[in-house]
Length: 303
Ligand code: FJE
Ligand code: FE
Image 1 (cartoon, rainbow, N blue to C red):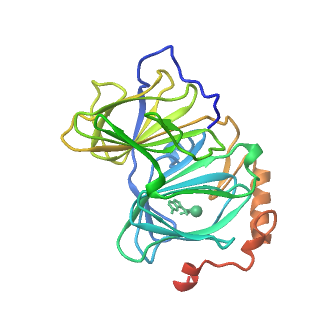
Image 2: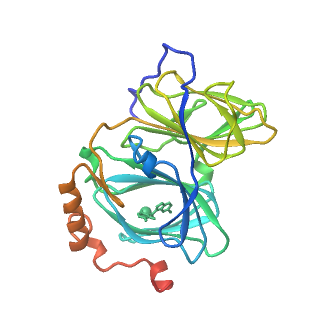
């Protein structure tokens, strides 16, 4: 994040919750299930966020070889592990607590497949890139679970995926300025977390039940997405239940650009999408290495 971020001092109030969605399971990829909140038809785009999937996948299903262009995918594992392989020969396992921040830029072709035993769960957030960065070289930023910035105070634990909270900061470089915080609140705990003015922000509840924005509001349970309004300095949240509450708070600076999406390609115009499909089919302009590549897991599973 740039150092120019501005936090509102004009209001000491929390941002309000303005919309609430329950993310129900739906099929995605090859036999996988996702709870998609952002990216579904009622909420196609929440600038700069294209999709938020809480995924659950067991072998032999998953997300075999597929391309991306024009945005970033952020994979944050909650349970188990996913093996990632790409057309450059990068291969690795993303395990519970690990983070993979992938800037697809002009092109990545990869597979994301579950570890062989059990159910693998995680979150995948798609963040749009500005027109000036859509065709940059692809880049990975990977942080293992032990190295994710984490701190705890007064019954609140935070893991800082991107941005800053409770005085600690993530080393992740966000091309599109983004904050991504994983909070766990013990019963009775509460938070006051600043959010930069003019950023769009949302909460997604992972476990337990919490009160968000207004202490008089009803508790919200797991798998709900809450869109926050623009007034207020940040987010206030309370755990008034007898169980632990876990949620993510994500914010981003809106790009304010036209978005044309065709599956895993996200550009600014239909012409650029047409060119992207050509590039992918012809293995040009960033997709050169797709020509003779198949992931090992795809070969193994006989897809
Ligand atoms: C997909 C394009 C994709 N949600 N959550 C089209 F990129 C994908 C895809 C994923 C995905 C992968 C993981 Cl590990 C987690 C995800 C979409 O790979 F499923 C379709 N249909
Ligand atoms: Fe992918």
